[in-house]
Image 1 (tube, one colour):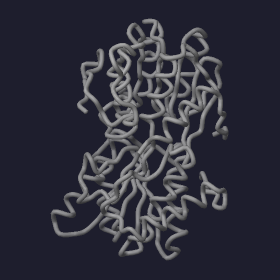
Image 2 (tube, one colour):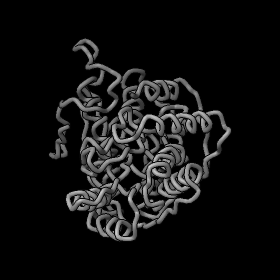
Image 3 (cartoon, helix red, strand yellow):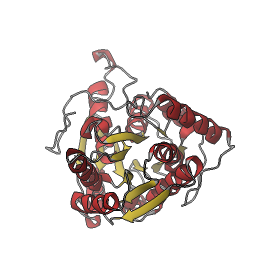
Image 4 (tube, one colour):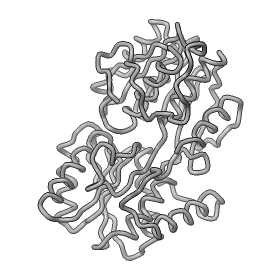
Length: 356
């Protein structure tokens, strides 16, 4: 993937500033979102009625195959749009893609319905968005996890390898067996960044630890995640980091089964603080990827300013775009101190984390 540096235009500064302040109930009617508050973009309070500038503005979102209930980045993006509705009065809606043939039709549905902004969530939507953008030059589009070089598309990507390095440090220092695992979804560039960073972090913290890797080939198959986790745990792995969307639900379920059976194993979550969903009994920590903040900030900037900056942005540790969650009750203080030391070295450039 082409590497694009952070470009600090006015809109990009809004996005980075929002991320620097980082620390549900899902409406599945696929119509206007409920106004339930969520954790997305929690730094901003509910707007007063006088500031509801989004009334009459429509923002749509197309999921990848993981779906809006993936407990991962699609869900984070949808929670951001729910908050956008609460704060601004904008109309928000999602369309769920069951397979890759639905990406382009779903994007076109929002464009033809004159939505003010249409999001595509996920690397694999990139080709479809490029085609829709070319055919509809007046449409405003935005995408997470891919760079689409078009004058009407805002691209937001993340340095997943940096946050993954930090959870790799945690895994390397906390494994009791010197065996840890990585479960990926599809074998694509974005997920390779997670894997590369994780392996580098483990190696830096514990050169004796071995990392097993399994790509399930899917983001929406919990059964495959459960089988992959079972194989790893059977082989002595005691900590698994997953970057597999909804497939990761199976990884957590397998861990829960093991813990109930008296075996202590852990999962490192992804994108969101997955301890909220799966509990602290199996969630060691999570590699936070603040998709919600990015979606919220770009969308709100369009509402408030009427302008649409399409220069690509890459968000990493220095922007608080990735990292560990604020609370890590299962990680000892001395290890968190080590994590902070590695984080500082990455931000300063002393450590360059590999992307593949």
